[in-house]
Length: 357
Image (cartoon, rainbow, N blue to C red; front, top):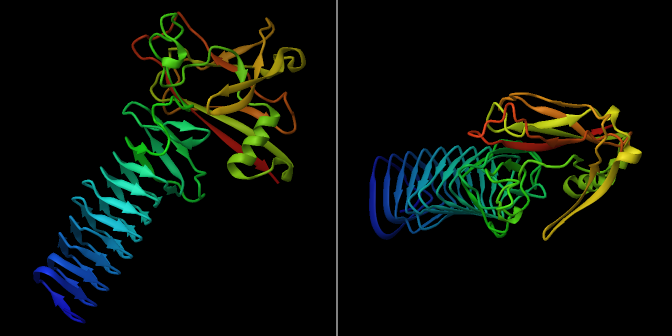
């Protein structure tokens, strides 16, 4: 069928081809659809869909839909979409999306490859080599500010607004798996979830699959490592700006925090020349430099008792105007008076890089 305008019909063909048609309120089975416009249609077991514009339609077991524009539609039951744009839609039931641009869409139990996602909700998916226009991540494991690992149901929320292609934030990943890197290789994580046996002699650190609360006083970076992070992750040299500051944002996943809370030191009480030293952090897949602080009785410490999940602590970790004297020393501590063993600490940290003209 060619160059027709059809409304409220059913097509049950065996290899029939519909080309350059305008279809509305139609059901199409076992056919091919090319260069057509569809509205409120149902496509079931279609072998080939290409160069169509579809809205308010349903795709069931579509072998291949490519080079098409699909909006306000449902793609499900192992349907496959290639090199297309999908907006304000639902993709589910073991469907596959490759080399496509997906915006404002709910994606679940499907596979995404080489796609660009903006303002989407992605649940229980396999994701390979995708670009995120900003990212709000649930249940994620991160390494060097990149999402790398298998995602568990209990890992908390992380917000990232500097994806591989910077843009609007809003994509949400829930319980998905990021491929290419070994999810069981214990990657560096930005989530701290205390194990009940942490600090116990019966448990080695390499047996833990999440970072634990810090057990030594430190600053997360040196002036040198802060500048290197800026260049690596943002391709921005701090020397191009009058001032460069790194601020940590620390918040609990569950509140109130009574178990090993964060404590920060008044930096005016620290002699950085004699009480601080740079320290290398080296693992099989990670290299960084931070600052270790040695104890002194003159240090003044503060903590926020009972911090809630909607509260955030912000503290400076680097400042180009202060070199290696700007970072706020911090650690976790055991408060025997208030520790709640029934709710072990879970927290998340984010670093904000601030550039001044």
